[in-house]
Image (cartoon, rainbow, N blue to C red; front, side, top):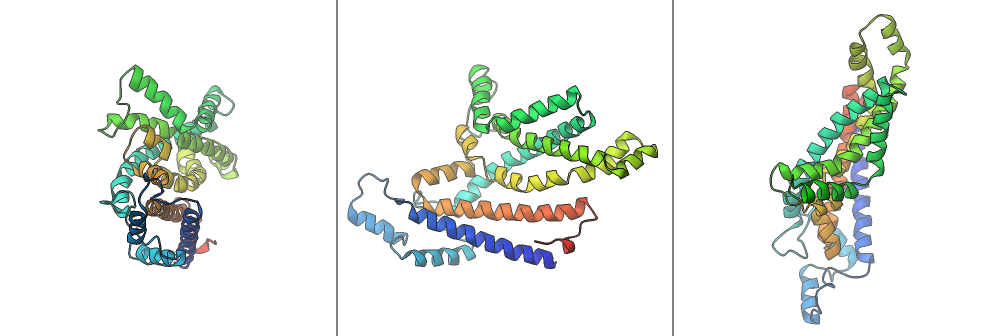
Length: 308
């Protein structure tokens, strides 16, 4: 419990630092949320700044934002009068989370399978094939894959819709585009970790006792080899769940990534800051879950023994 309290305290401090830096950077960069409008008259511009309290001193805006954040209010959108940042996250996150959950499940299943197969067949064709696929997955950016699969399967073959979010078929191409990188990383982590575990003395002892290969792999080796994968899953899940900004825009998916990109273009301060805070909080939460998962997967690790 003491570890979790220390972790929570340091996480809140980290979140405050992120909020502060993002808030300062948004206001330091020249321009404002209403500068892109076509020659707004000075009186209208003044009224808009007064309405959203952008004419207040910077420190007053910062304190007001923290007060509203403590109440769970991320503020109004400067560009969409009928929407608040809470509404945008409430609308966009479920879409990104649905897409992300599918991507993570596929990446976890395929990545673990490739990593184990490669480790058990070191320096054989299965190993080389898995390494080749993992290298391609890491090397080729997701937006390149997105453009390629859209051209082949949507434009040429017409098997899937090229864009929008209209049922299961519309998820296939975005999932393929996003799953390559996490699958490749998990496969490489699992291969290297599995090779290290298979060379441990307790594995050799299990083999000498005549235990079946499947028992050795699934009961003894896999549980210890999967720890690096769990470490990677924390930030990976947070990143994918909050939306791949480029891929969501390519496929016109109404997820959180799309709103974030538009907010940067529009200089919509509240949306930029709100999505950043939401992503940071989710990332911190997932990292805490990783620590808890360590204790569940490996009984030798106890939360009370962990240190910052």
